[in-house]
Image (spheres, helix red, strand yellow):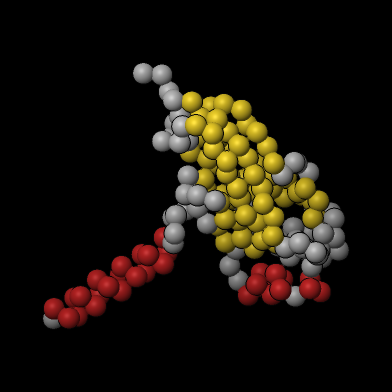
Length: 152
């Protein structure tokens, strides 16, 4: 009985660790065989046009504030654009990505929220993006923000 209980607890712990991942909530992935195929099949590659600058300075915020960032893009290719993964550089930033392919000519957006709690000083954050695009498949979306300590 003791071995059975230990096995159950180990299995539960393993499932929780896998579902939480490293930096729970900070890694957004699109699931499915179609997505994986689109990311490796060069016949499905397309072209992305970033409508916003990929590197931004958001100035100064107070500690504890949440900073919302968004990067707009357009699919200027001839096949659907698939954003396979958006991975923030740390757990203080949570990313959101399009879950469906972006049709040719359509626009999409990658969003993120930076939680400045306990992050005073200059913060350099990056969102690592993987997509089915010609030439380059990995992009770095960067932002900088100065976080001032909140007044006592």
